[in-house]
Image 1 (cartoon, one colour):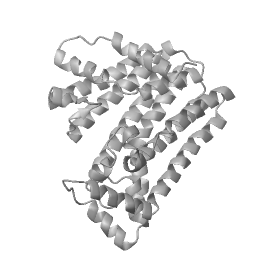
Image 2 (tube, rainbow, N blue to C red):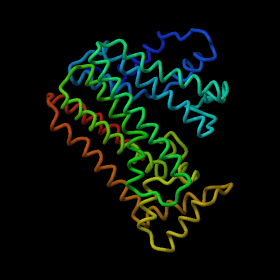
Image 3 (cartoon, rainbow, N blue to C red):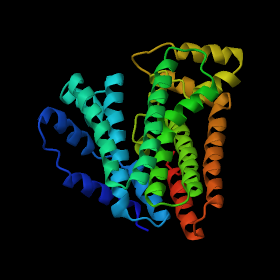
Image 4 (cartoon, one colour):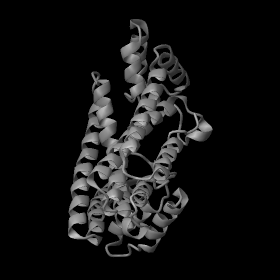
Length: 324
C-alpha cells in the first residue's frame, strides 16, 4: 500500500504529463487551469487507495481516478457559475478569468473527457465503470438542484437535507471508492461495501463541515467561519435548531436568517447561541459520529485482511479528526 502523499503525487504527475494543448485554446486552457489549481485530490486518492485495498495496481487505477478528478472539477466550474463565485482555491474562477460561455463549454468538454478515460479498460470493466459513473453524475446534478431549491423554501426537512448532501457530496465519494474496487476486479459484495463505506463517510464529512463552519477554528478550518450563517444556508445545524427551539428563539432564528447586515458579527454570535441552546450543535456532533460508525461497520463485512481494514479505519478517523 502507498501513502496518501504518494497517491497525491501519482495524480499530480499524471495531470502534469497530460498536456491539453489542442485547439481551440479557449476550450482546453480553462480545463488545464482548473485542474492545476491544486486541492487535496481526495476523490481520486480514494480510487487509488480502494484499488490497492483489493490488490489492484496504481497503474491500472489511475485512469478511473483521473476520470473522477476531471468530473469533480467540471462540477466546480459549473457550480462557480451558478454561485457567481469570484475565487476557487484562492485563484480566479474559470468564468471570471475567461467568461461564462467558456466556463459552460469547457465544463461540458470535461464531462466528455472524463468518460474517455474509461476507454482504457476492457469492455466488461468499461461497462461497470460507465454505469456507476452515469448514475453518480445524475445524482450529483439532482443534489445540486435540491440545494438550489432549498434556498427559496421554508419547509425543508432534515431527511430532505440529508438526501441533498448524500447526492451532492457523498455519492461521489462512494463512487470513487467503488471504481477502485471495480478496476481491481474484486467481488461485487466488496465493491458494494466499499461504496457504502465512502457514502457514509461522505455524509459524516459534510455534516462535520456544517458544524465546523459555525464552530471551527478560523486558523485551521481553511474557510471563513460563519459563512453558512452569513449566506442564510439551511444546514443540518439550522434545521435541528429550528425543530428544537422554543417559540421565542425559533422566531429569532427565522428573523436572523432573513437579514443580511453589513456587519455579520452579532448575527453569527446570536445564531451560534441558538444552535447551542437548542441542542442542535450537540445533535449534529452525534449525527457525525453515527454516520462515521456506520461507515466503519461495513469494514467488518469486507473480505480483506485485518491490516487493510485498519488502513481504511485509520483513514476515516484522520478524515473526521479535523481541528475544531
